[in-house]
Image (tube, rainbow, N blue to C red; front, side, top):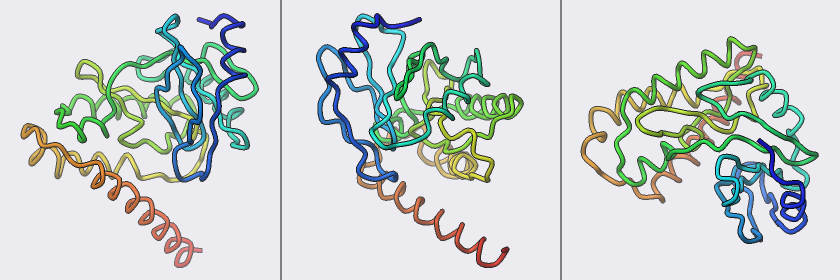
Length: 218
């Protein structure tokens, strides 16, 4: 499912985005109408067009690497119930199947209950990716979507990294130990400042943990 080349080229010529830090989402300076910004990651922005509701364009910010490896990840994933499909690619962009739903991050932000089925779906999806020779990496609350009570994954750009990543393991543990017994059915909304504080604190914790492992295990 491709986008009309004229529409796509006009978009690429007009859109403006930049990445100020590899640890923070890209900044979108201009989104040409009628395109809309769907979301941002640390290396790329994702955009949709009303005439193409079933696809999105993932555009890498200038100077940010990784698109070649992401293309290969999508090639290995192929058709899957849990992951997007890559329909088209260019020098700095990918045209992907649009995955509907709300992120787990936003579920917690807005007090929307997350059923256990979503967590177990992610477990199955990660097992499927590993069976296809990939290494699920950077799986966290903003990269997992919930749609009609089922779980789906987006942003597989780091699935080539052959190194231990505990983000999903830690999130799953927090779900069963904290969220499920104390938060799920209460409808409580967790403030964004608190969620961002947890996110940044976890990132720094991960860096210190990696440093300690290198210091004592090398």
